[in-house]
Every structure is written in structure tokens, then in C-alpha cells.
Image (spheres, rainbow, N blue to C red):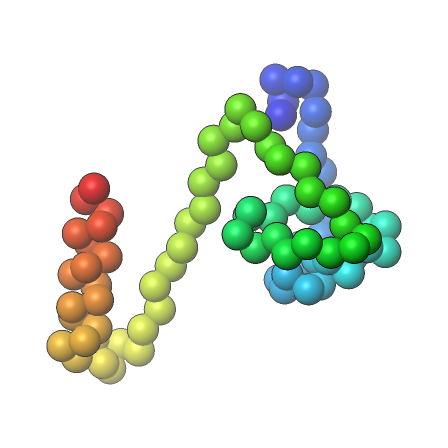
Length: 85
């Protein structure tokens, strides 16, 4: 966005999708959400962002005490294999 002379100055962060929608609906600003998170709403519009590579990071959480579980080991192995591709 800086290439186009635009600067984003976030004021606050909202943790829930519903909270974001309510804030935008009440005129508190705009938001960027993943396309798979956007649910059509009668008072909100969607603008597709083109010509940009947008990445999302995910984390895996599991109970350390169960890290030796065959199911957790198999899941983590699958994730590692997916990361290699």
C-alpha cells in the first residue's frame, strides 16, 4: 500500500469476526478479513483486494502432556509433510 501512497494506522484490534462486523457496521472504520471468513451481511460490502499476495499464519496448539499420543504424533507428522510441499 505504501507504493500507492497509502498508509494504514490501526487504532485497535478486535478478536472476533462478529465484533469486527459490528464495528464496521457502526461506522468505526474498515477491516480486512479473509475471504473464507466473510459472510454476506445486508449492511456490509466486500471489496476484493487484487494484485497483492496476502499470507495468513496459523498455529497448532496441543497439550504438552499429550505430545506422545499416537494421534497427536500422526497429526504433527502430517502437518510437517504438508509444509514440505
